[in-house]
Length: 293
Image (spheres, rainbow, N blue to C red):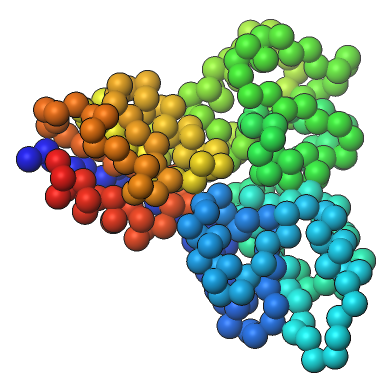
């Protein structure tokens, strides 16, 4: 029988737990609750909240439609909860202008980045964000910058990057950015002699989670990574584990685990999970693996 070992850091991080708990607290008020974007990047969590009557506003048009919709007498008051990833400043402004009640569940580590880029861009620095340009956290960060901001995701992009003439840079990172990649890009900027201020805004939970996953993957014969398919931090965990362990599986649910594709002789199965993966799903996978390996 194979040993099954869970990484030291796996599952809900502080910011995700805080955001999900915030929505549950708002449900108890009896008001009609919406989240601006999925509260976290995990479909299981979002489905559970939908079962409690929580709606999801996917974009600014849906927010505008909600405000303009004729509401009959006796309809519930509306509360919009800001997702853990945060949103651009204009979304707060639009809700305030339209008198919508807003509850902010943005992760405090993400809010810190908003304050940094707002301050530094107001002082004339050009913001460079290291992260996934299509990720809602990055879009939110850009929305707090005064003026343009650039987003870089790879070392190749860093090599080719030319800052706007005469501008001092302020470099920040998406909270879930790969820590080693962050260090490499900063080194590239230093070698190119850029005048920059670097703020490491990767949260400690991300760094610890990545290091724990890498250490376990080095020992494991099979590595299982659990998380939402749209989760940036889970995808990074998968990439890290895949670099250390050939047989690395990405599961959104237990149905995605196909034992027949794995080697027959296994000594150690390692398990890790993204920051928005609920504990009950992790336990379900753990129990199944223990029985079947």
